[in-house]
Length: 354
Image 1 (tube, rainbow, N blue to C red):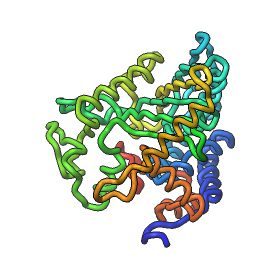
Image 2 (cartoon, rainbow, N blue to C red):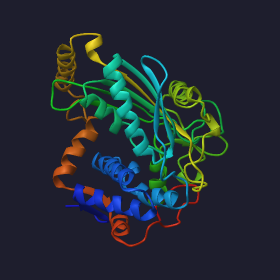
Image 3 (cartoon, rainbow, N blue to C red):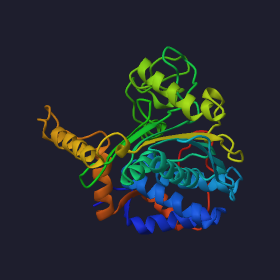
Image 4 (cartoon, rainbow, N blue to C red):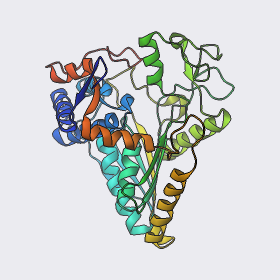
């Protein structure tokens, strides 16, 4: 039974509704299909900030010219194990999915692949990409830039983005190990959710315009990095590798997601893939990772916990349940998806669904 204001939707229906909305906005079928597939995965994992809540925003950006509808996506091999995917500012999920294809092929050919994707749009959940690489037998790391909404440690002005990092490894079990995290304590979507519900937030999430911790979501001017200077260092690393290394805008110069939807984003994403067969026996590697999973699960849980899970395992559990029982979608968003409205002209720089 879904909660009030929530509708359970079959995954296939949800994907088709989103695909039709993107095509109505002007996106060709292939990128519309891949983007809808990606967003369905995000909502099934329970990461609703990257699922259906993005559809109206994407449709608006597509309709207003902020996405190249016919990108010339090419791969430039720059070394034995390196390359650059030129995304031509196509739809982010589509560009990065095709970019991953090139990276997987290179990883299998060379044993190691370092592949950058330059000039792409917002690409969604990184776990979607590394999971697929692991299903192809490769160890994978992915990272990408985002627009400045995080204060550096000790600062009071935004500079870096939430700059996520993801990791996956194959196992001899049913599922690979998959882990995906932002380098901030909480995502911007959590701030918006607290605002809409009139709830306070912990003082460890964000700061006000003076750089002071705040519990009022309406006073938030910047997010905080995880673990203070350590998270700050990680987000800087991501920005250098997925931005400057690819000749793209960096730090505070990265384009805003919501402010001008007529402009292309010019974002960067980076994949590092490793073929276990080049380092050890691949079957033995998968078994060792599988043993690690079993040993972690066998650890006695601490007080207040039912079990020890792997990082990212909660998303996989939610995904399996959602694919069987239906995906939770806010009823107002489901109504929008079934309507004839293409986009809502609702973005004011904050990105809330209205």
